[in-house]
Amino acid sequence: MSTVSHESNAGPGSLEGQAHVAGADQHRVAPGEIAIGVIIGRLSEMFDFFVFGIAAVLVFPSVVFPFVDKTTAMYYSFGIFSLAFVARPFGSLLFRIIHDWYGRGTKLTIALFLLGTATAGIAFLPGYEKIGVASVVILAACRIAQGVALAGTWDGLPSLLALNAPPQRRGWFAMIPQLGGPLGFLLAAGLFVFLLLQLKPEDFLAWGWRYPFCVAFAINVVALFARLRLVVTPEFTQLLKSRELEPAPLGELFRTQRASILLGAFAPLGSFALFHLVTVFPLSWASLFTQDAITDYLFVQIAGATLAVISMLVSGKVADRIGRRATLAISAVLIAIFSIVGMLPVFQEGSRLGAYLFILVGFTLLGFSHAQAAGAINSTFPSRYRYSGAIVTSDFAWLVGAAFAPLVALFLASNLGVGYVGLYLLSGAVGTLLALGVNRNLEMRDD
Image (tube, rainbow, N blue to C red; front, side, top):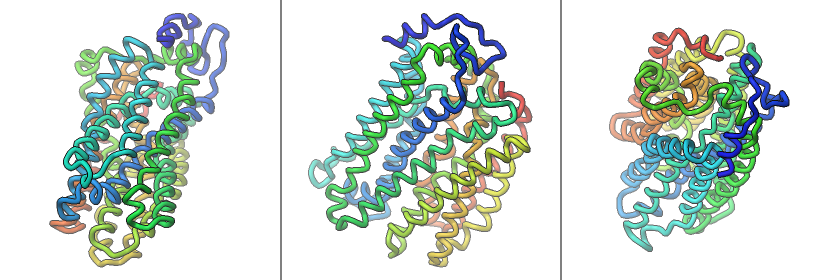
């Protein structure tokens, strides 16, 4: 309830045309200060995300779905994985109500507490051999809770960071929140590699896999305090209000911004499709159809995530030089070429080198494209609708582009061949190019 008091008693100082000034005392809020909170918050979310994603391949098929064959168990596991994305729109609506009634700080506290509780709950999940189908139900409930909670963690700071960036560096500052993706994957994959190398397979499946979920809970606690330190202060409350980063009426949003929501959902489609095709899908393929050590693939993916960080930094520089729209278009074309050339020979020939190259090149392209994906969503909307529009559009973009990508990719590869996975990725790149072709005002809405 304290957040309501902060928001209602915030200083009345006018900030029109001065996005970097907040409060009656004209306190300057540095973009770097916002960036730290944004990176910590996004890293914690992505760590949770990838801990579940890796466990969906390495753990749940054996622990929760031992009653079916390995391939079917992986399908079931990926089905549970997708539930978080299905639940996100409902979570956004729920936390919109909490935001309106109790304020941004209370909303964020409840969301991160729910996320941490659901993640920790998975850490103590009994397997199918102990409680039967109830294990499946509990895992699904925890995954749905994660999706609902992730929707509530949106605090407006990424948009605020982009809006407070120097005019000629908005591509760079739009990239900063996205660094949480590869950094979160690095931590999650590194932790699983350590456990896999230190434990016997039976010990890992019995109890070792639970530790990453406990670590995720601890990281969420740290992220909660780091973000609350920003969002509940009077200075940031006033700054968020001054830039109209407050919820807009949903009826008005859908009535006036339907085209922007649709275009914003399709603009990052290629990037979001690639997101799971280089992280979760290769692990499932290696686990089911090769005799290779899964740690080898995780090591390569760690190297790939490092390349993704570098390519994100490059993308920020390129976007500032040639524009976000052109950068996204280039990345979509590169993803399209990669989907045609890179996917066909990779796994079919049984070449580990080919598989490794696919992962490394894929991560590099993912970093370059994903760095501007959030900026594409935010820039689609005028300032009045940016906060609510970004939430709704992001939910739809992840649902359409990423929710079922591992499941679809595994089904296509298993039944039709890896080449059809390339066609699936190509459809995402085409969707991005079409959205960019229609939305020619992308560069004009950064204020």
